[in-house]
Image (tube, rainbow, N blue to C red):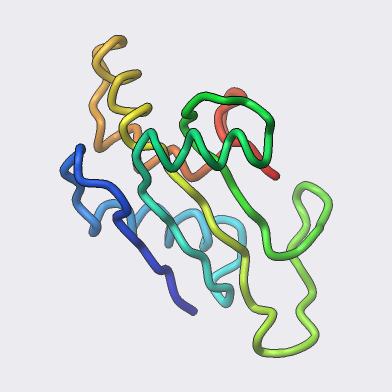
Length: 126
């Protein structure tokens, strides 16, 4: 199905193609190619508002996810109709991630293409 990418910030220049490839590779690794997913690249303001509203933390963060289905870790949803082939939305806090990269000498593009996949405590499922 589809991967929707929305750039909802202007502070950090981004390339959509590597992000799309990373999300498609992640869906393939999970066996979830038939599912839609949205990736929203957000600035600090939006990430702070979402983090405050859903996690009660008044600060920007790196990744927030909003799954469409409730499933146990490692399980795929079992859609009942075509409209339910949706994994949900992933918000990347690109300004937050860029600051992290600068502090630690990491490449932003490399980190962004890994960020949609939860790792070492990064990525929050709501």
